[in-house]
Length: 381
Image (cartoon, rainbow, N blue to C red; front, side, top):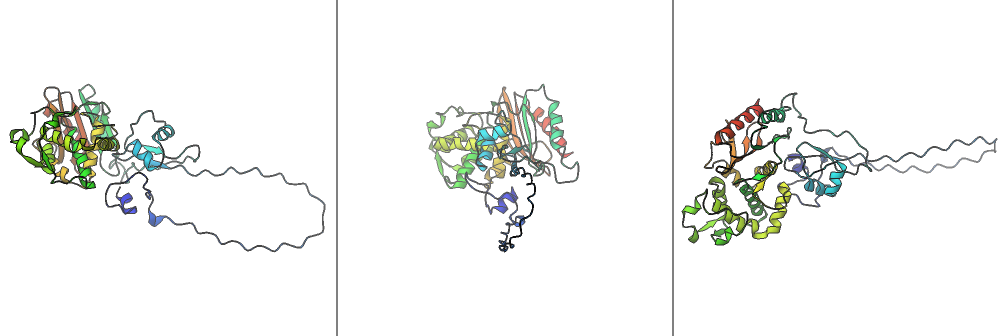
């Protein structure tokens, strides 16, 4: 990604439909030199006629050479619509050319993005093969998958994804199954707020006032539950956008989440739907989510130039619980609805950083912590 940004002089992670990006190093690409036209040769003087010779067999026409096929290696956070748009093709064509039967693609997948009937197949290089000594990173996702395979009969939904540039691979257990996310989907509101502030549509000091309308949506949380705003004189108090966002992350504030949904998410519902589709492939915001989708949202927050959310995720009321029990720095968002659901999603920062989402049909905090430590050990071994 750094190479792509450097070659195209991008100062942020934003790109737009129709942008043309250089995907090869401009310093190593040369422009073909136009050959000088040859001077016409003076025709020879006609010679005396000779005996006719047998005409040569006409040469068979040479088949025109097809251009080499173009491939795209899927990176973390990418999805079919985005890749199709970048290559000026439709999603249906992309699926057809790659024999895809669903919209799910995975980090490290190599997709053909040119018409196979008009291009010559080549053997694409696989950038997911680490450009490092053999064995350095090759087995991380396989080691994690081996851990997850021990839990096949457990009521959990797990998705692991490496954030190491040369090792963008994943492991999963029920990772494409939707489940009620409790407070986990609040990260979608976090991510959308970051985008809107970055675009200049909102500011961190924007005032938000309580209104009963914040409970009018199917995705609103009931009054009470987690958070601190409910214990204040919130009906007569004005909060800043930053204060509400920070409390929603640090305290998992339900009332704050409802305020963001009302003032930010559903301020322009069509645009919010555009965002959910672009970032994690969902047509709209819902509190039922798939672990793979949650990882994509966390990756968006992690890579976003507005780092306020990462600072809040680094110090929450739920530090040193669930996924935040491994021996390194963890940026965690939790969700729970006792005794039905207990969840956590986190960015684990280390020399082999990764995103991990664990959604469970009420596993205990200690059980999630045990799995987190086993996965961390597998990654770092």
